[in-house]
Image (cartoon, rainbow over all chains, first blue to last red):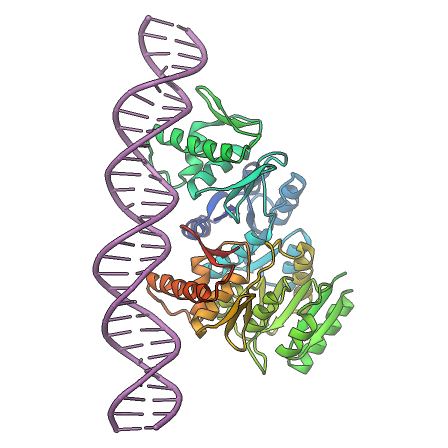
Length: 220
Length: 220
DNA sequence: CGACCATAGTCAGGTTGGTGGCAGGTCCGG
DNA sequence: CCGGACCTGCCACCAACCTGACTATGGTCG
């Protein structure tokens, strides 16, 4: 259960990655070039691991990673590439990579490596003060306590806390909580919001979910 | 830079490793078999990375790693082996490994990987166990008693306890318990979990296996 | 060789907890 | 005061999980 950012230009490989990671129980944010990767992954604090192709059409994946780092994205990076020379690998590690796999890769091995990176990365993320999410324990933590969240609750809360202070639209929340595009009744969202609020209340969390009528939700 | 623990029986390879790591600016503690590794690395809190050969003369390197974890040595592990099949790698990761390299290896790449592992530091684990595994006797020991485990039970429990406080996915548990990749019924996992729980209960073990629905298992 | 036993794997049935949705109440804006 | 958006309490379903029992297999020992 982790959120994985993928950047890969090849349609087929990207599809395999996305499908494989989803089948492995992970949430996936996919980009097809460096610019999109920066936009999607740059400030998303929910991303726990980045899988980055080195050979992108618009730029070098290693440059993208360095840009990501300077944008504040500190999630561990797994480089994926057709280049198997030691020199290429060394460059990968030197530009901030944490692992390196050569295509063609075995999907199961990639999954295992991604999971190790996810387990190893920062154990908590979110607005540093107040509410913190722990993807490994599936928990939300505050200064006053900790509660366990179910998978759906966790995805939902993660979507809202990933943009602290900013209003997250209802449809965005739905897309995050139900990534497979399944349609759920509008009301179901309310139910889950309520459950999360109840859980946060149970530990006297100082930060709560605020409703912005007609738009969505946000956390202070 | 860092203190690296090495366990490798082959004279030549061990020499290359030790010399290479020293040249890279690291301190090295070297062992030539599992027993020595346990003695030298077991309680050495200065060790930041372990490089472990899987094919040791006296025992399996994966068992040694599990014994090390039980002894409280939670430094990241890089497995080094001649076995390159995906199934071997998966088992390596499931046994608590953080990286996996196949011989013959490029020394510069190994150095780069060791440095990445060292930079990440020890995993943030939960409070130390109370539950100790003995790979020789295939036993689980706590303050309150000791039980003997069957081989399969032991591999399974070892996979879960190697990452205390973290949720270990069902798939990972399967990879560890059935190293040859044989397919077993989903239900079989439940059965073994139950047997292990019963055995731990029989000695009033304070630490038990907790179910995280839809994800896997973990020990507190 | 035959009896016994430990281990492994499977199955059927029961239980639990996450999920989604309904019905009705409440609040807010116009 | 009206309508829509949201909240609340509650229930039904189903997948995941637990439980206890059963069969098969291979090893051990008299």
